[in-house]
Amino acid sequence: MAKQRRVFEQGHHRKFLVVVDESSEVESALFYAALRISHTSGRLLLLYVIEPQEYQHWAGIRQVQLEEETNKAKALFRLMRRKLNNAGFEALEHEEVILEGNKSEQIVKLIEDDEDVAILVLGASTDPKGPGPLVSSIGSGQMAGNFNVPITIVPGNLGLEDLKAFA
Image 1 (cartoon, one colour):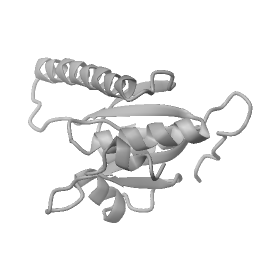
Image 2: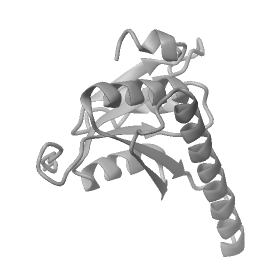
Image 3: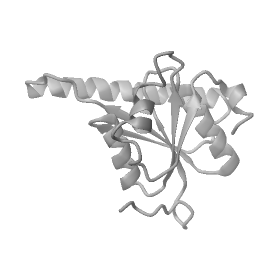
Image 4: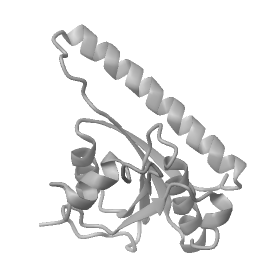
């Protein structure tokens, strides 16, 4: 059974979850979430998932990969904060989380563990091949229907000015 959301109880804050990676559509999801938070209150929860690489035969190689990915996650978090600050969202409260494992599974786990997560915001790729692997797996793969919060999928071609009309 899904955990009851407690976002409007005393001591809790509604969180908008944005999955951070190096894709261009992340910026659309980030700005959409920031705009919604600025209009309706809440906090931004940035998630970076370190996905294990295949053929990790030695612990030393795995440790090096984890360190490199952690450094990359921290750099992406700094970049996202800089983008938010440059767009006028300096006061936006946010959290940063780094998890390790399958991306879709870790998103589900974080939502289950954090009863303040109220909405998942994803950016859809503008690639003609499809909306991207994460949006595809959540929308139609084995992960479809496993979320106990609403999901907003933001077109990746929308910039901040475009998004101001929607959020």
